[in-house]
Amino acid sequence: MLGRLLAKDKRLNYFSTRVNAKDMGLADYHDIIKRPMDLGTIRRRLEGKRYRSLKGFSDDVRQVWYNAILYNPPGSEVALVAEEFALYFDEMMHQVFAEAQREHSEIIQRDMHESK
Image (cartoon, rainbow, N blue to C red; front, top):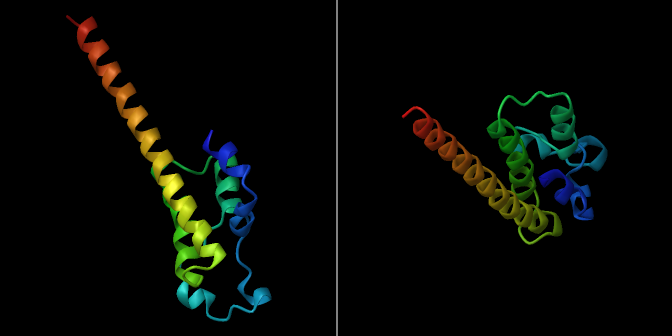
């Protein structure tokens, strides 16, 4: 669900591939960005079932936004888009975790009721 919603926004092209600092002339990129991450890498990890938890996935997505906000000048289009998606992603993840907790609570209540 989240992936389909995010994939529709063309502004995500900023984050779709790994930053090629050398080709882009960003000599200081790897001095500032210690953990590069991009949405293409995340997609490949998802397809390869490399995430063991939702937390690992969400940490990587948050890293994309963090890197863009950290490296790009405040108020630049890339930084603003990253800030917007960071907020959107956190809202979506909050909903996912809230739903999972509700389902977990329902299962526990059902199991307690059935064991009586």
